[in-house]
Length: 231
Image (cartoon, rainbow, N blue to C red):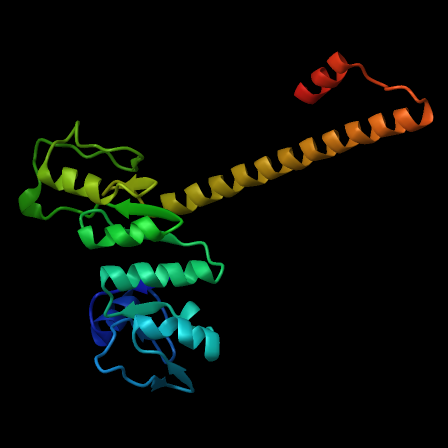
């Protein structure tokens, strides 16, 4: 499911999360800021939610797994966001991290995620160049600094080093769903091919064993076995 990590406080985080269509009612927001001294878990409806990244593992172990399902985390730092990603991975989740390519604080989260994708935000109007035409629906998988040199591009490229993909500022976010569907299709085909190969190898071994037991002679010569294995 979708999770939103915000460096803002609870009110600002829930306001923006509501704009994204996320649940912001009770039991939906956890602050990753560690208080000094540590504070008790706060009541959010019928559930008790932990406060601070240092209490997440303890809560999951001793209370419930609600922190693995909440959609909003507020008061996040680069370190706490990366640590929360590690907690999700420890509990069997595969994490896809999507964030801004020009926000250097996203780099630790990109590096911890199983798959990372950075997005180049729209530049301010004062930064636009009239003579530069930006192609639409372009999904980048490599740096664009040689073609469009600028400090903003090189900063985005350095921040996105842990990322598998860089989405152009004009790329539709629906491209991500298309990419995921294509990945699942390739994975399904690879799984079927592997199962087919496994069945063929098993059939070859059974035939060799049966020939040795019944006829006391090998059914295939060494060259034939090599040819069948390669085929």
